[in-house]
Length: 148
Image (tube, rainbow, N blue to C red; front, side, top):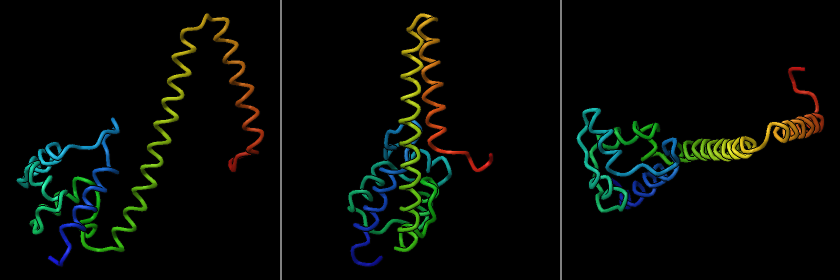
């Protein structure tokens, strides 16, 4: 491996952990990733992944790198090729932004629904009427959709 590969690998691996997350939004643990990879037939431990993430190991096996890439859904060349890394990182940033937007929109909608549920039927109808007015106003500001 080239000089500094341990640090490069650690940075790229840590970026994957920070960006590719399960639905709950929490970062995968080293042990979870290790168990998932081991279930595919490639034996790896959480402590070994920790060593890779801390740049304490500098010569991982190709099988481990392929398994880590497969787990995170990136090409194995992500760990070696700067152009691939840049392209994948750009895609991951877009995905992360979309996920954050979806989470925010979902939590806003859930909050509206929870608050509306606590209202009387008459007041809930008022809220729905107000939402309809705001919705129509926003649609008018946006103009006709391309399908219209």
